[in-house]
Image (cartoon, rainbow, N blue to C red):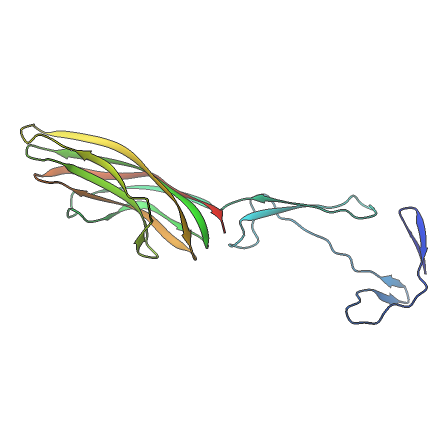
Length: 215
């Protein structure tokens, strides 16, 4: 049996080894040789929910000998974001209240960078001192706060003799957080005072977001 490749002639006279692991097959029409074709996926695509890297495959030119395939990879981490707001006036002091709408799902196991940009506002009248608004990121699935994400959004000390006042401030909380599987996280807010009555206590989560950084 004769053939050629890359300008060189060759001949196969020896029989094909019948061993089960030998993929070559001799037929009456010629020798069957297995041919593997690699296939990549489109940018931003995924084979499964566990995939966090896109693999690019560039095939050889038609008729190339030898066939040279180029394989490359690009990190395409899963990500997401949400926002929301909640009024704290009806909540008891020192209790954590979910910020409506500020909730996302970390879709798979891995390490994520989770960040929340938070804004708080509070109004107060005569007799209020040391009014505080805090915020944090909370793992609903595991029922635990995300470590290192609790932030003091507002802390002020006011004279009891002053009249009605108000204040607004911003904070950002972020951390690397590892989960063993899908997990829901959200922003929560809390308030308290040393004395007196506050009003119009609101926490906004302008942007709760995540990006997977590793498996």
